[in-house]
Image (cartoon, rainbow, N blue to C red; front, side):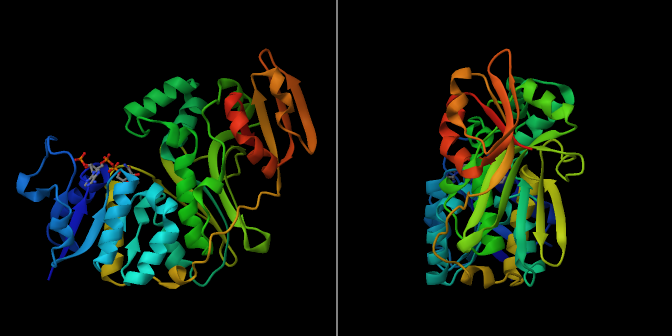
Length: 392
Ligand SMILES: NC(=O)c1ccc[n+]([C@@H]2O[C@H](COP(=O)([O-])OP(=O)(O)OC[C@H]3O[C@@H](n4cnc5c(N)ncnc54)[C@H](OP(=O)(O)O)[C@@H]3O)[C@@H](O)[C@H]2O)c1
C-alpha cells in the first residue's frame, strides 16, 4: 500500500516536495493525501479539496503515517512536530530554527513516543549531510566540521569579490533572486548558520549546544575595503561555520567571516552554494557541496527522509547518545583582521599579539592574535561600532 503523507506548508519547500512526487508519477515512496496551510485567501495551484486549514484533518487520519512539516513559523512548527510525534507518526521537518532551539524537548519527545523525527533539509539544503553522518561515518570519529551553511551570504560575498558590487547592492540582488530573507538579519548576522551548526554538532558529536551560545559575527558591515584587503593577500572572504570537540567534553563552535587562501576548499565555493567539510579519524578531510536552498533541492532532501524512514535506513545511535546541554569552549586563539570606522573604539578588543596596525581615512585596521572568548565578549559592541571582523 502507498504510504500516505500529510503536508503542512505549501511554500518553497512544500511545493518542491509536491512537484517531485508528481513527477515520479506513482513510483515515489508515498503520496501527499492532504495539505494543511494557514491563509484562506491565498490563491492555490491545486484544487481546493487538496487543502485543509484544520490540522486535525491530518493528525487524526489513521491512514496518514508520515507528516512533513514545511511551515515558516517556528512556534507553529514545534506544535505540529510535537503533535505528530505524540500521534505515533514519523515526522520530517525543515525548520532549522525550531529544531535547534527545541532540540532537547524534541529528543525527549522522540524517546517518549517512540516516533521518529528526521530533518535532512534543515542544514545544507540538498547536501545529504545528516544521512552521511549517521551512516557513512557511523564507525568513524568526527574531529571537526567546517561549512558554508548560508547560501544567501555566500552569494553576496561572491558578487562583492567577483563583480566589485557594494553590500547594499548585493543584498538587494540576493533578495530579488529569492536567496535572502525579506528580513535579512537571519542571514547577514549569521543566525541562520548558527541554527544549522547546532544540528550538525548534535549529529556529528552527539552533543547539544544552545544556539545562543554559538559565537557569531556576520557580514552586515563588510565593505569594499575588506574585500580589497583579502584580495591583496590572495584571499576571499567566506562566512565559515566551525565546530570541533574541546576539552572537558565541550564543543568549540563559531560562525565567523574568514579570509580563506586559494588552497582552502571554500575559496572556490561560489554563489548560493553551500559546502560542508568533515574531518574524521579515518577519512581525514572530505567535502560535500550543493544547493543549500530552493524548491526542488530542499523538496528532494525531504523526500530522502521519507525514503530513509520507509527503508528503516536511519541509526538510532545518535539519538541515544544525547546528553545534557554542553558549553561552548572559546579559550582558543585565532588571528583576525579587524576594521573599525570609529577610532574611539580601539579599546574594544585586547590582542595577545598585534601583527599590523594601520590608521585609515576613516577609523583603523588591526591584524592580530586574539582569544575567541574576547571576541565573544565584545560581539555586541563590535556590531554597534559597525566593525568588520574576519579570521585569517
Ligand atoms: N526555502 C528554502 O530554500 C529552505 C531551505 C531549507 C529549509 N527551509 C525551511 O523550511 C521551512 C519552510 O520554508 P519555505 O521557504 O517553504 O517557507 P514559505 O515559502 O514561506 O512557506 C511557508 C508555508 O507555511 C505555511 N504555514 C505557516 N504557518 C502554518 C500553520 N500554522 N499551519 C499550516 N501551514 C502554515 C504557509 O501557509 P500559507 O501558504 O497559507 O501562507 C506557507 O504555505 C522554513 O522553516 C525554512 O527555514 C527553507
